[in-house]
Every structure is written in C-alpha cells, then in structure tokens.
Image 1: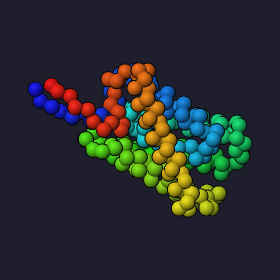
Image 2 (image 1 turned 180 degrees about the vertical axis):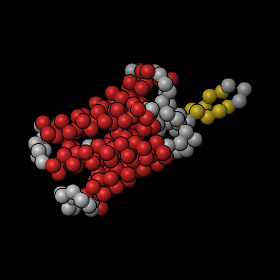
Image 3 (image 1 turned 90 degrees about the vertical axis):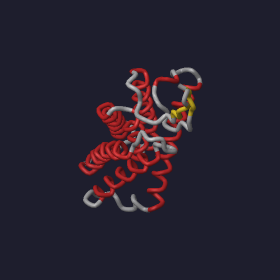
Image 4 (image 1 turned 135 degrees about the vertical axis):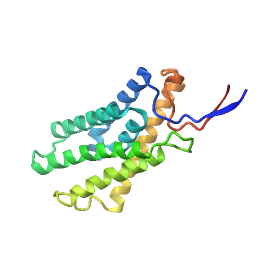
Length: 195
C-alpha cells in the first residue's frame, strides 16, 4: 500500500456532466454580471476558468458566448452608442478575451503547486489588459482607463469573480448537486488516497 497525494490539479475529466456544469457556470455568471459591470465584466476570470476546466474549443465557445451576450446586453439594454468606435471596443474585448484564454492555458500546469489557477489568472488578466491598452493607443475613449486605480479595481472585480465561481462549484460538490469524481478541483488543498 502506498500513499499518494491527489491535489486536484489538471483539466476537467472528460465527463459530460462536469464539462456541462463549467460551461453553464461560465456562461450564466458572465451573462448575469454583464448588466452590472458592462464592459468591466470579469472576462479574465471567466477566460481562466474556461482555459483550465474545458478543452480549447469549449473554452473559446463559452467565453465567446459570454462576449456575445455582453454585447447584446450593452447595445440592447444599457444604451451603448451605435458608433464605429463602440463596436471596435466591443471587438477588442472579444479578441482580448480569446488571447486571455490562450495565456491562461499556456501557464496552467497539472503539477502539484499551491493554488494552480493563480498564474493562469495573472497571465489572463495581464494579456486581457494589454490587448485593451494596445487598442486604446488607436481607438478614442481610453483616456484615464488604464490608471493604476482603474486597473486595480478591474483586477479586484476579476479576482473576486474567480474566487466566487470556484466557491460556487465546490459548494455544489459539497451539497451533493455534483458528484465528487466529476473532475479535479481548482483550489483543492489536498486529499490523501491509499492504493
């Protein structure tokens, strides 16, 4: 009998229930947060979760659906102006979200490390913000959008959203709504199993 540590790292197991739960959680939370945060919807947090819990195609589809919903809410209910620069900013947010997924996937590791989602999240946030910053060099309306206080506020929104979504997922497992073996956890501190 040998002891081994299962730290709960790695991408989601291919089980359809776990995959579906993450897609629904990402799309629903992004949709629900869009009316409150508008263009500050936590795309970096959603891109991180999608990157580490879903395959590439599902991650892009889930975050893409959040982006489309965010744009529909913005133009349909929040009164975004129907101008070329508003549309260009919308496209920039979508492109930056896609780049955030790639950055998070690039830094995610299945090796046992503390808080394995932290580096992918930092990468996703940095790439997302850099994409917006680069667009702001040519698009109007970026004045004051990249001050330390604004970027810090956006980072806080994303960090809280990431922690909240992970907590919701783990509460669903603890309450029995999801099976424990449906996939690895993001912030699991460790379980010892004997074989």
